[in-house]
Amino acid sequence: MLLLGPPLLLFALITWQVVADGPLVGLDERLSRALVHPDRASELLADLGNVQVALPVLLVALAYVARRGRATGGDRWWLPPAAGALAMVLVPALVAPLKEWTDRPGTPAVPPAVGYYPSGHTTTAVVAYGAATLLLLPLLRSPAARRALVAACAALVAGASFGLVRRGYHWPLDVAAGWCLGAALLIGLWLLAGRRRAAGAPGPRTGAGGRAG
Image (cartoon, rainbow, N blue to C red; front, side, top):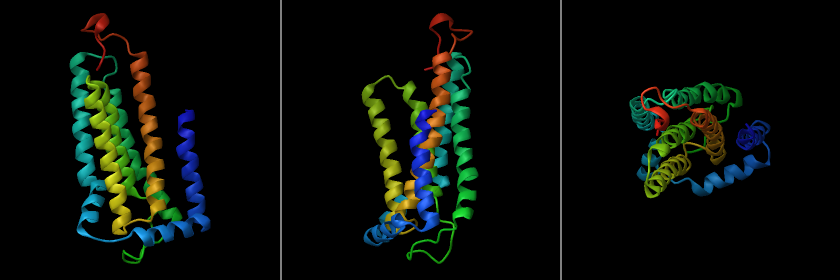
């Protein structure tokens, strides 16, 4: 549980600065002015955080992991995909009330409105791509394949985050807060899945060697 401390503390610090209009907000706004340059490329990158793009990736991973776990007869094979689905469900459940409470206005690049903090698109990207990666990693035998999967996940999250800031859809602190929330949810997923693997008993059909991959 100690792993949850750093991202939650950092999120609390960023939120306090946003709500109190602290020094980080001024730095955030200056950084945004330096980075914002709306173009087609930044818009396409920002779309990587859309539910319509990120959710199908996670659903495919969940279905594959569930199928593999059931086929190998592992104990509680359903727990990792269920935890991954729960992590995704918690994204709007956490982000929506935070947006309403903080009531942060958007950048000059978007129409006047409030409710931009934290970035739901960033949190969606972190949880969807990150959960898919965490669940698929134990099924990959090749170290090169594992490295490629982690690199692809990092590239997707980084691309979405950069696109959201570059396009002006979000302030940098909105995105940073999305990283923190997403990291906390992924740590919770990792703890659930890790506990299941550590305590996993042999499957009923595969004997002493039968554990989910």
